[in-house]
Length: 180
Image 1 (spheres, helix red, strand yellow):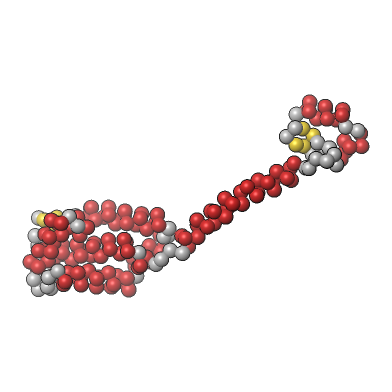
Image 2 (tube, rainbow, N blue to C red; image 1 turned 60 degrees about the vertical axis):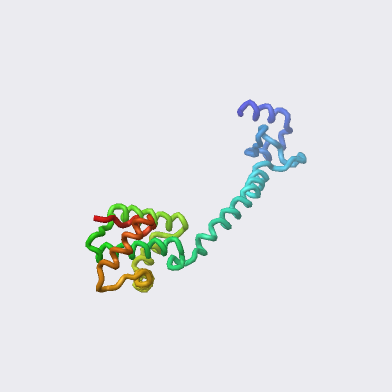
């Protein structure tokens, strides 16, 4: 670098040496005013212009995360929570069917991970899970499913029958249950 500076200094008149002090390009020292654009400023602008489309794409791709539908409307998550509630009701009511607690815990963790990967924050997930309104809604849908399939509150065997059917069909509900 020092050799380039010395060679440029020899070719340049003395008056220009003072003006070009500190002005460097990729080829060495360039005098100002010789028809050549200052490369330092130009390079920065060119790089910024090249990065602009990438920045805009990043902003556009990040926007859907802000426009997520509420968790209470997310079908996959709600269906899994309803299935878990139905399985819980069956295991608590039917004496011959038990719950696969560790499996259910793993599924709950997967569901939370699914929600995070969709763009929901931990705070949004926790608020949804703590929401009394959403819990009531999920419980009501689960009870409706059980009643439509023949479960009655005073007949434990009706819950057992539904549980055995779910296990046999290998449904999400059945995967959370095991016959004793």
